[in-house]
Length: 285
Image (cartoon, rainbow, N blue to C red; front, side):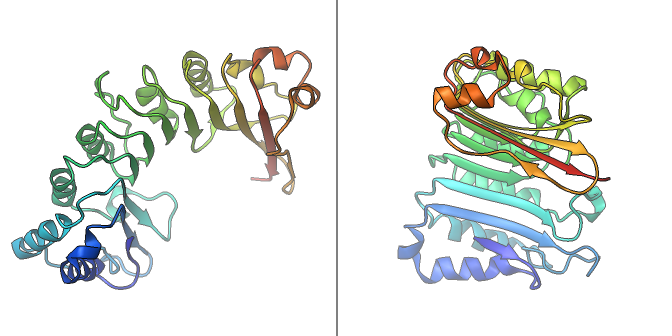
């Protein structure tokens, strides 16, 4: 994993290490690049993964070094701001587009199965097109989700962890077995019904994790996600209130215990459910 925090150009040391030991580079299966920037500490982006001057020699050296990684199966490319969870585009760390092009070109024949990214939607879509072998995608974007993903893209995708916008564009029509919902969806909003309809319409689903926001602990969310094949359901509900409280499990329940834990009649909505975990948090805003 290559991560830049205080020192600019950390990727250069990575390139040198690969070239110094090409035999060991050939055994690398997991490769990651995390561009971290503390915007408050330095507006110039000290701590960038990349050197200050992106010369042709640097790009050539990087591409040659990456070619030594001959059998990768997972790639992480993330742009993170260590000061702000949410930031404006001019504050965000940027991975050069040419770097994405090099990654895509060098590993275009590799069987990449896992991608973890925090990129803009166009770059993410470019990488998804490169690797039809992807079966796991964890992604966050700070722009609108791509709307031009063709039906034949990501044919082997089984595990998806993204926000509501990405779920709506990626999950339908694909053999998704695990769906992790990031962020929060408001129970009374249109996005909630959209998310629930995607879940109900995905026949291959085995596991889901959903994060919701509600006004009351009495809200009955389960019917919206009724599913004949679902086996694992992890539900987190965030409430407005005073202080913080948690309740819920994460325990494995037998069918009889599931019946006791779920509201009356709810088990009929999930005939194959094995594990149900509900966590409720309440915090004053």
